[in-house]
Image (cartoon, rainbow, N blue to C red; front, side, top):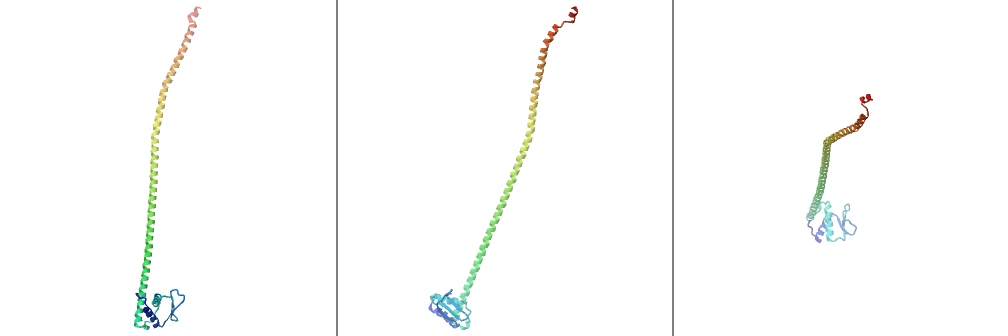
Length: 218
């Protein structure tokens, strides 16, 4: 409400209180809002230390909250009073709209935060799933590689064992073959030497032994 702060407008407001039979006082006192209303006594007390603007604003606040019998007002006072009421309703509507907007903004912020939190959780869950899958895949690949190495080692060992056995057998055969002629030669040489050693003794024995004919002659 565009209500100018003038002494004349203060008088117009005071006139409304007079028409509805309310006693208006400007006195000193302790007031939380700068004024006090005694409904049962129809007395309105306004802080006397308020300036012109403070007094006008206090009377406007009081009239905007009062239920007035409009039949008691003059045409001029009724017009002013309705302006005050309309201004009050507009202010209340604006305050309600502001509260609704603030509530909507709060809900939107809460929903946004919740959505962000859910997205973060889903992202973390997806990351955990990928990490788990990677770990399992790596473990499986490592196990498969280990199995392959073990299989290859076993096959290599199996292939090498017969070859080594064959090599040993061949070496043994060759050694036996090489040793056999040598042993045969040694046996033959020994037999020859024995015969050689025995032959001269036989000859001497034959010489020393007289023949049967010589024995008869004697």
